[in-house]
Length: 338
Image 1 (cartoon, one colour):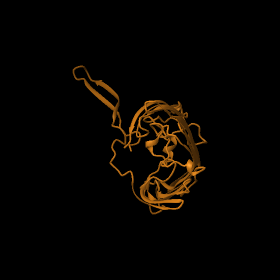
Image 2 (cartoon, one colour):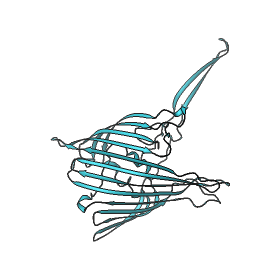
Image 3 (cartoon, one colour):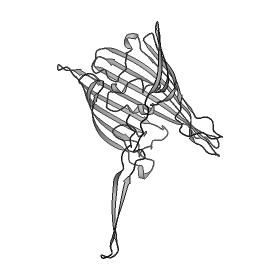
Image 4 (spheres, helix red, strand yellow):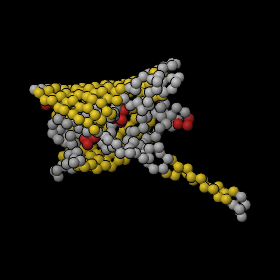
């Protein structure tokens, strides 16, 4: 996993030269202004470290797992190797979790998948003597198909033109509760973020379509003083593609996507933040439109992707940040999976 946007070496953003004194005793001073990222370096860390046991019986497959893992949710149910575009769906960055915990997942009658996970919360602050214990992350997801023939063995954002007919409807619930935001002798502040919503994935031969909606409620609780109002947000997206096999053995697939991000439905001036590194990673409100074309030389194992992304953020809250953030990004990627 590459480092988040912003991980870069410092670069010079301005140079000022000032000369003082007489021509004989002149002194020239050069001042260099640099943009120094706080995330220039990153130590190697484990991405997955877990153990699991699968129990099989008539009509049931039950998976029990523990360790460092992603929960069974909309973001983790589709492998990144099967993405339709070079970048994630914007909604994925709001539901991506990965921590240490325990969970279970079951496939029932080949037409229903259900999973529950309990993991460490995202708190990074240590509690003090006056604080409750750090928070906890809980997650649940259910997926169902109208029949076992409609439930794919592996979900993908595109089937690269493979024949078949699949329909999967899912629903996510996630709650990152009791996250410590600040700790002091006078006040402890905790944050709880609940995210819920449905999604639907459809495939019929060359056609693949995916739509998802997530609604988010953020609660802030102070141990002393007033409690702020809840913040309601909503994110939705829809994408579709049609893969066309050629006589030369590969498939060409035009694709399109539109996403709307509104992190605070009571505030229409959340803009001002720039767009980062070719995909939605800024946690900002706005609209993203992407279209592209994929060439599948050997399915998702060997493919070339070309995409154009247009981003328009909301207006900023002040004159200094009043203009809407805009971005035009062209991405070319070749993927080999083995």
